[in-house]
Length: 110
Length: 118
Image 1 (cartoon, each protein chain N blue to C red):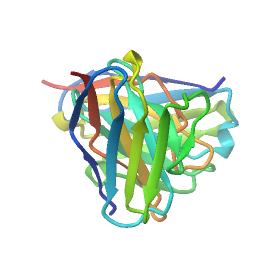
Image 2: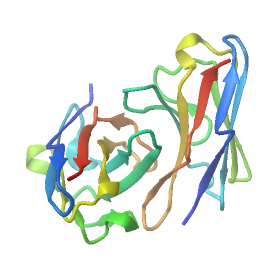
Image 3: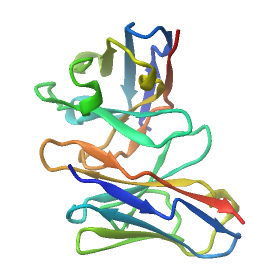
Image 4: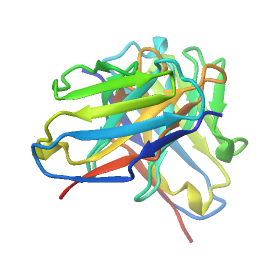
């Protein structure tokens, strides 16, 4: 079973600053890594899929990258007020096809 | 526009049962794997179960294996989750989710709250 570890747990930043979120997999997931944003009281929203592809309608300030199939990064180049939220990474095992989520990183206003 | 609308949540006593439903529209339902994902109050996301396009394969997280059953009716564009022997730790918002590849979740319902408490 692949475990996803996200860090830091909480990131305290100001609007306009750059946010760098990490997701580490316990074994290689190839490039099948997705990122989601969740705001209070709302369902999560897909931001990035296949490690680096922005989902439909996602602003260019969001970008994803990965290295070696185990280390992934979500970067928000310049935080907007609406970006303060919780972010989750996610992968799916090849077989059985179980989905796994990381524990989440909360981006809060400093 | 894809819409996933869950229903059936509510308050149930420990050991009780509940059946969740999800009505899908705007998507070729019979072509998509479907899943349930839950979120306990103040906690992170947890995948619960998924089901193949034709219902022939079903997979569960270990903590619900043998207690929950996922099913679908492609003629009605509907997904279900039968939950038996409910425990306090099953308290969560349950989301109906899907995506074209099965490797990610493109579409989420609004969620339905299940509260297990005496």
